[in-house]
Length: 222
Image 1: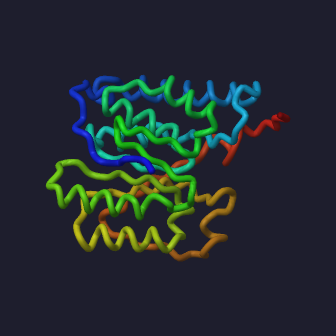
Image 2: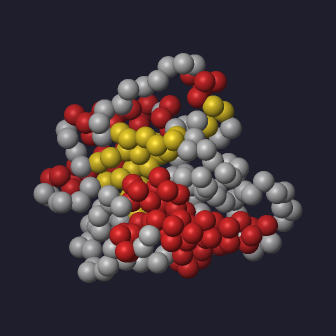
C-alpha cells in the first residue's frame, strides 16, 4: 500500500509561476508527442492514454495549486503529473517516461508531490474525501485537487464524495474535465438532456480532445 502521509514540501521554486503559459504548453505537447512516437515505434509495449486539447485550461488551474497539495488523477494522468511536478519545482518528464515504459501509465504515483492515480472510473473521489478530512483535522493549509472525466460524473460514488466534501466543508476541489465523451459515448446518449447541478466544491472545464481515447489512432502490431 502506498504511504500517503503528507510530507513537508521541500523548499523549491514553484516553476509553474516562473514559466510562461506557452513554455509550459510546449513542454506538455512535446512530451506527449514523444510518447506517441515511442508507442508507434514499439518502444512502449503497454496501453497509453494520451492527452491533448486542454493544455491551457490545465495550466491556469495548476497555477492555483500549492506545493504540498494533493493531486489525484485518472488513467489519463500525464499532464497532471508533469504540472504537479512543476508546482513543486520538479521537472518530472524523465521520471514519467520511465514509468510509462514500465507499464505504469495508468497507475502513476509519486510521494514527492503527493500524486496518486486510479484507472477505475471515479476511483479517486473517495480517496479525496479521506485525505481532505485528514488535512482538515490536522489544520493543514493544503488541499486536495481531484481530477475526473465527465464519464465519472455518471458514477454514484462521485456524487456521494461531492456531497460529503460540501457538507463538511472539506479542503477539496473536484475538477470535471468535460470533453462530452465517456470513451466514445456523448452525454446525450448516456443520460439525455439532464444536467446535474453540483455544489461549489466541483468545478468544470470543457475542451475538445485532439487524441483518441487510447493509443495514437495508428494500429501498432506488437
